[in-house]
Image 1 (cartoon, rainbow, N blue to C red):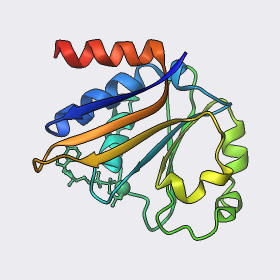
Image 2 (image 1 turned 60 degrees about the horizontal axis):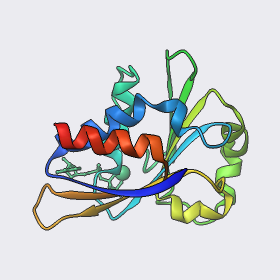
Image 3 (image 1 turned 30 degrees about the vertical axis):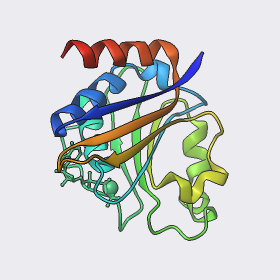
Length: 167
Ligand SMILES: Nc1ncnc2c1ncn2[C@@H]1O[C@H](COP(=O)(O)OP(=O)(O)OP(=O)(O)O)[C@@H](O)[C@H]1O
Ligand SMILES: [Mg+2]
């Protein structure tokens, strides 16, 4: 079963916690061929911060910076099932087809890939339909963030609920 859930964090630590949990449940994130996470939300809400923690949790050691200007960055992974993570920032994309020129079609086809996409609404038309979607919002306090997770498998949503309650 697929569901939607909203969590609230008060610091970057909370974003790290969520990223670690999702990175640890990659098999449940797999909705198409590659595992795809769409990360939407206003500027500065923590999309890149989330990706950084997520990739760290998967063992990436190198510096992880925002791909705003280069659009896409890739990281070699040493996990059992996944070989490459792609961090894509669509902020500057005008036409979704630009991503095809960057090879997105092939990237999504490969079940050894993880694809994390910022500003996914700009290219929504060409994304697979069943991907998990995280929408980040500012809260009322400076470090507060509200994250709505859309189309998450119920089992994973239950783990998140437990994990956030017990920590
Ligand atoms: N709870 C929090 N979660 C996420 N970021 C936080 C939090 N509290 C403070 N911050 C700060 O907010 C900023 C988030 O920046 P980040 O680059 O991750 O945003 P973004 O959503 O990727 O923005 P952009 O749309 O420009 O790519 C960082 O400077 C981070 O330190
Ligand atoms: Mg960003």
